[in-house]
Image (tube, rainbow, N blue to C red; front, side, top):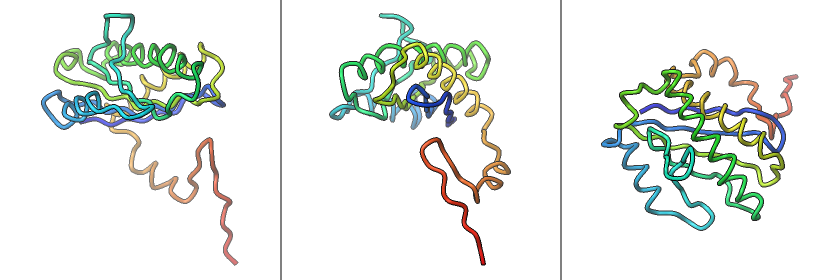
Length: 169
Protein backbone atom coordinates (compact mmCIF):
# COMPACT_ATOMS: atom_id res chain seq x y z
CA UNK A 1 0.00 0.00 0.00
CA UNK A 2 1.25 3.48 -0.90
CA UNK A 3 0.07 6.64 0.85
CA UNK A 4 0.61 10.13 -0.53
CA UNK A 5 -0.22 13.74 0.28
CA UNK A 6 -0.06 17.03 -1.56
CA UNK A 7 -1.25 20.60 -1.09
CA UNK A 8 -1.24 22.75 -4.24
CA UNK A 9 -2.32 26.35 -4.73
CA UNK A 10 -3.31 29.03 -2.30
CA UNK A 11 -6.40 30.69 -1.01
CA UNK A 12 -9.88 29.28 -1.39
CA UNK A 13 -9.09 27.43 -4.63
CA UNK A 14 -6.17 25.44 -3.23
CA UNK A 15 -6.33 21.64 -3.26
CA UNK A 16 -5.37 19.25 -0.48
CA UNK A 17 -5.38 15.61 -1.58
CA UNK A 18 -4.49 12.46 0.34
CA UNK A 19 -4.15 9.23 -1.64
CA UNK A 20 -4.04 5.54 -0.85
CA UNK A 21 -3.06 3.04 -3.56
CA UNK A 22 -3.26 -0.65 -2.94
CA UNK A 23 -4.30 -4.02 -4.29
CA UNK A 24 -8.01 -4.67 -4.77
CA UNK A 25 -7.65 -7.90 -2.79
CA UNK A 26 -5.94 -6.21 0.17
CA UNK A 27 -6.79 -3.66 2.85
CA UNK A 28 -7.03 -0.80 0.32
CA UNK A 29 -9.60 -2.73 -1.71
CA UNK A 30 -11.60 -3.52 1.43
CA UNK A 31 -11.50 0.15 2.49
CA UNK A 32 -12.49 1.24 -1.04
CA UNK A 33 -15.52 -1.06 -1.18
CA UNK A 34 -16.56 -0.30 2.40
CA UNK A 35 -16.41 3.46 1.85
CA UNK A 36 -18.42 3.20 -1.38
CA UNK A 37 -21.07 1.07 0.33
CA UNK A 38 -21.41 3.19 3.48
CA UNK A 39 -21.94 6.85 2.60
CA UNK A 40 -22.78 9.32 5.34
CA UNK A 41 -24.71 12.58 5.29
CA UNK A 42 -22.79 15.02 3.11
CA UNK A 43 -20.01 12.55 2.36
CA UNK A 44 -20.99 10.31 -0.52
CA UNK A 45 -17.91 8.63 -2.03
CA UNK A 46 -18.09 8.12 -5.79
CA UNK A 47 -16.00 6.68 -8.61
CA UNK A 48 -13.98 9.40 -10.36
CA UNK A 49 -14.55 9.56 -14.10
CA UNK A 50 -12.71 11.24 -16.94
CA UNK A 51 -16.10 11.65 -18.58
CA UNK A 52 -19.45 9.89 -18.06
CA UNK A 53 -19.07 6.11 -18.28
CA UNK A 54 -15.25 6.34 -18.50
CA UNK A 55 -13.82 5.83 -15.01
CA UNK A 56 -10.14 6.45 -14.58
CA UNK A 57 -7.90 3.43 -13.96
CA UNK A 58 -7.00 2.30 -11.45
CA UNK A 59 -10.57 2.75 -10.29
CA UNK A 60 -10.48 5.77 -7.99
CA UNK A 61 -12.84 6.53 -5.14
CA UNK A 62 -13.36 10.26 -4.59
CA UNK A 63 -14.03 10.97 -0.91
CA UNK A 64 -14.81 14.56 -0.05
CA UNK A 65 -13.41 15.98 3.18
CA UNK A 66 -15.97 18.81 3.20
CA UNK A 67 -19.69 18.22 2.86
CA UNK A 68 -21.20 20.39 0.12
CA UNK A 69 -22.24 23.65 1.77
CA UNK A 70 -24.22 24.97 -1.21
CA UNK A 71 -25.24 23.99 -4.72
CA UNK A 72 -22.23 25.90 -6.07
CA UNK A 73 -19.84 24.11 -3.71
CA UNK A 74 -21.34 20.75 -4.70
CA UNK A 75 -20.86 21.55 -8.37
CA UNK A 76 -17.19 22.39 -7.74
CA UNK A 77 -16.77 19.00 -6.02
CA UNK A 78 -18.60 16.97 -8.66
CA UNK A 79 -17.27 18.97 -11.61
CA UNK A 80 -13.77 20.46 -11.64
CA UNK A 81 -12.44 18.70 -8.54
CA UNK A 82 -13.57 15.30 -9.79
CA UNK A 83 -12.17 16.00 -13.27
CA UNK A 84 -8.89 17.09 -11.68
CA UNK A 85 -8.65 13.95 -9.55
CA UNK A 86 -9.36 11.68 -12.53
CA UNK A 87 -6.88 13.50 -14.78
CA UNK A 88 -4.25 13.48 -12.01
CA UNK A 89 -4.57 9.71 -11.61
CA UNK A 90 -4.21 9.28 -15.39
CA UNK A 91 -1.17 11.59 -15.29
CA UNK A 92 0.38 9.42 -12.54
CA UNK A 93 -0.12 6.31 -14.68
CA UNK A 94 1.38 8.04 -17.73
CA UNK A 95 4.38 9.16 -15.63
CA UNK A 96 4.91 5.68 -14.15
CA UNK A 97 4.05 6.59 -10.54
CA UNK A 98 1.40 3.90 -10.88
CA UNK A 99 2.66 1.03 -13.03
CA UNK A 100 0.42 0.21 -15.99
CA UNK A 101 0.27 -3.41 -14.74
CA UNK A 102 -1.43 -2.15 -11.54
CA UNK A 103 -4.26 -0.34 -13.30
CA UNK A 104 -6.57 -3.37 -13.26
CA UNK A 105 -5.43 -4.93 -9.97
CA UNK A 106 -5.20 -1.89 -7.68
CA UNK A 107 -7.51 0.87 -6.46
CA UNK A 108 -6.98 4.48 -5.46
CA UNK A 109 -8.73 6.32 -2.66
CA UNK A 110 -8.50 10.10 -2.95
CA UNK A 111 -9.57 12.18 0.04
CA UNK A 112 -10.19 15.64 -1.37
CA UNK A 113 -10.64 19.06 0.22
CA UNK A 114 -12.61 21.64 -1.76
CA UNK A 115 -13.02 24.83 0.24
CA UNK A 116 -16.68 25.92 0.54
CA UNK A 117 -15.47 29.39 -0.48
CA UNK A 118 -13.86 28.19 -3.72
CA UNK A 119 -14.83 30.47 -6.59
CA UNK A 120 -12.74 29.56 -9.66
CA UNK A 121 -13.63 26.26 -11.34
CA UNK A 122 -10.54 26.26 -13.54
CA UNK A 123 -8.21 26.82 -10.56
CA UNK A 124 -10.00 24.08 -8.59
CA UNK A 125 -9.48 21.72 -11.55
CA UNK A 126 -5.79 22.60 -12.08
CA UNK A 127 -4.93 22.44 -8.39
CA UNK A 128 -6.68 19.09 -7.84
CA UNK A 129 -5.06 17.59 -10.94
CA UNK A 130 -1.59 18.62 -9.81
CA UNK A 131 -2.21 17.71 -6.15
CA UNK A 132 -3.37 14.23 -7.18
CA UNK A 133 -0.45 13.63 -9.53
CA UNK A 134 1.96 14.88 -6.87
CA UNK A 135 0.39 12.88 -4.01
CA UNK A 136 0.60 9.69 -6.07
CA UNK A 137 4.21 10.41 -7.05
CA UNK A 138 5.05 11.13 -3.41
CA UNK A 139 3.46 7.84 -2.33
CA UNK A 140 5.35 5.92 -5.01
CA UNK A 141 8.63 7.50 -3.83
CA UNK A 142 7.82 6.97 -0.11
CA UNK A 143 8.03 10.71 0.52
CA UNK A 144 8.57 12.67 2.60
CA UNK A 145 12.03 11.57 3.66
CA UNK A 146 12.27 10.98 7.40
CA UNK A 147 15.14 13.49 7.61
CA UNK A 148 12.80 16.20 6.27
CA UNK A 149 10.13 15.28 8.82
CA UNK A 150 12.59 15.44 11.69
CA UNK A 151 14.08 18.72 10.46
CA UNK A 152 10.63 20.36 10.40
CA UNK A 153 9.35 19.04 13.72
CA UNK A 154 10.16 22.18 15.71
CA UNK A 155 8.59 24.58 13.19
CA UNK A 156 5.31 23.07 11.98
CA UNK A 157 3.02 25.26 9.89
CA UNK A 158 0.30 25.00 7.30
CA UNK A 159 -1.80 27.48 5.31
CA UNK A 160 -4.26 27.71 8.20
CA UNK A 161 -1.96 27.97 11.22
CA UNK A 162 1.62 28.73 12.17
CA UNK A 163 2.42 28.56 15.86
CA UNK A 164 4.10 31.46 17.58
CA UNK A 165 7.77 30.65 17.92
CA UNK A 166 8.53 29.86 21.51
CA UNK A 167 11.48 31.56 23.10
CA UNK A 168 13.34 30.30 26.11
CA UNK A 169 14.60 32.64 28.77
